[in-house]
Image 1 (cartoon, rainbow, N blue to C red):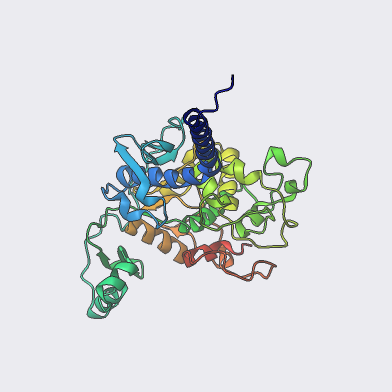
Image 2: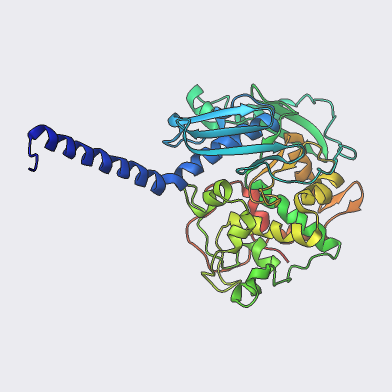
Length: 393
């Protein structure tokens, strides 16, 4: 006989409901996992880098506002930092390596020994703290929002200002918790430094702006026509979306991919190379994957070519797990070392009497060239220093 009792029927219904709920939860997690990994990846990398590079203990201050922040659980260890949602879901780990900062991956990355960089030849590293003139002091007050209400001053968030005049340090000021030896993340100012790296290689005759066939997997399709020049000018035509939201190409590259250059290289052509400008952190990191491979320098590419010659002893350009410097985003340096980069640019690539990039390289790097592209500003308000990448000779 079939048991149609209300109790047994109710139990069956309850089991079916619980099963459906479990399926919904598991399915929802699988669907949203890339989004969650973006959030936990940012948190893990941020906590690791602030500890290992900047020596700071307040990683939560550098988390961007997003709905995941309240449920993130992050733990920092001497050689790594791990983050997850509620301590269980979408775990990510960032590993620290001497000279290379932090790298996201499931396992500790196999990186080379970092080239030693000292401050020799950098006049700003140990310069005495200057006393600003009244006019410069007033300008510093304004830069730190002294004339603003406290809430607006906090929103402004100025952490450091370094002032050079005729190659001399004439003023500097730092927010509480920061100082001359606190490295700061440059984000897209790193792209401008990539321009200088390319200039170094062009000066040495190791790279030409018109080099093509940059990736072996591109052989046989139109991507083989993409040149170094086009990657620098962001006119490669490779599809990209620079929207900083969860699980977009830019955030996927930074927080989900083992090989960021390979991920950018895998994008299809959306436009003929050289005909359309699309702001793309993928293009810049892809370019550094090409340079790192061609020179054989790998993760030491910026240390050998630029940090060493300029004496940028604090500078760290973090690589991905494949050993490619993340040249779109991840250069850390003290404000004084950032100022040294600026002085190097102002001096047209001459440092301590030695020309390190071709004459006129910086002037050409900032010259606008008309090309099709989005009418909106794809830089999302990032530093104007990325204008160095808009056009090259």
